[in-house]
Length: 89
Image 1 (tube, rainbow, N blue to C red):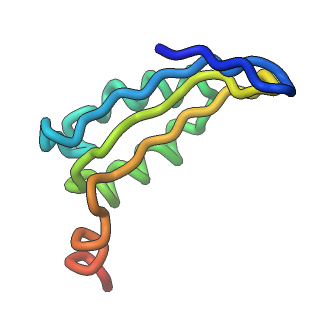
Image 2 (image 1 turned 90 degrees about the vertical axis):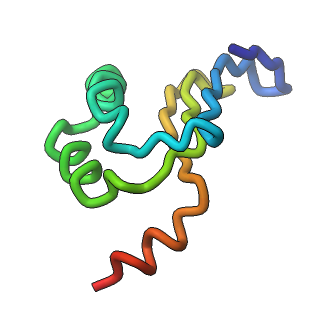
């Protein structure tokens, strides 16, 4: 967890690095659904995203509140390009 002060306010966030775990999106889907519920992301949207991208390896998760108090939830993939090319239709 980190806290940073900027000219326009404070930022409070965390990063969870998953690169070495080789976890796939599907491995953490139930936790992502919980986070999505907290951030008011439609369950349908999240389930569809996990179904389409579930085999992609996670890089890191980042969430918190930005300098203007707006909450964010972002996840990054560990080199998503090979996965996209393999699954391109």
